[in-house]
Image 1 (cartoon, rainbow, N blue to C red):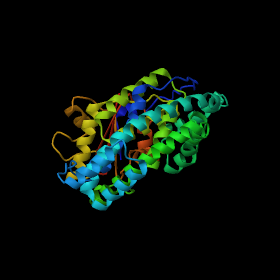
Image 2: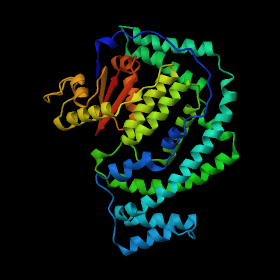
Image 3: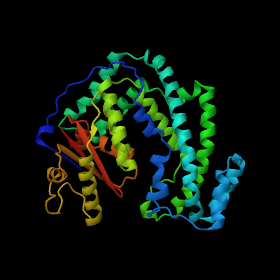
Image 4: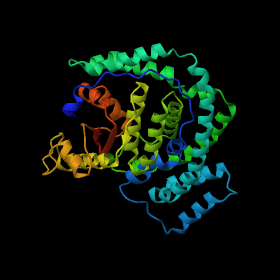
Length: 377
């Protein structure tokens, strides 16, 4: 569902012309993308519904000690992981933080290598781009938000192929980056060995979690890594310096959000930047207001912009309670993935207009599978 302020019902049709600005992405952004398992806590904590338990079992402590030993080979570590998996969640919960610590440093190092290689390849990739074609596709997609008769079919017919074309032009494919460097591929293979250990453990906790509290698909390190590579490739795509600064600021603020809240906002900003719009700054107070509304919808069993809770009737009331202001609101239910929620809104006419509106701030809040997205001027 969508809720717009009167100011947002008539959005100006100003389009930015593409500037092939090519600069290093802010280090803060890279640290969020490749800073270890920050983005993967969902299976180790959130899915289990409780903090990790420290075990006093001597057998478990001995297994963890062997895994940590510098003399232990990777083959021996695989055997220890298999032993922990056989032992069950208590064993896995004791071992998983050790794996994540090792994986975290390797992820950051790999992220830096991938980004440097993407920067080298992107220059050549962008030389083939015609700015006039980019501007024409952007205008065609953005013109949809001006149509009072906008339908989901129009978005699929114009918006989807337009976004796909812009991504092909402006974002170097991760496969191209990987194919260009034997060293990078070798480092990725080493990283994936550790990732497979993490995945084995994470799936134990996933399977042990109540079905209603876990995502539709089990954790996959390969899918996670491919997604982070795509995001890193996006960050070296052409954008104005102010846009990069917003993404750097957001990367720092995102550490205070739930994983899928942060990824939903990043997916929104990727869409906006590809279309030549400004990325939106994270407003933590809007996030808190949005999360509060999502929690109310979840616990009270309603799905609406109008809340039955006194003092929280409208989005403007809810934003004001948290010391900020709002200019629009999107809500969704049934999603466990922030990117999927973002694309669901993109394909819905009212939400589409809202998410591509003339906003400056954004906040996303999640409770279970309920999503609330608040915008601010």
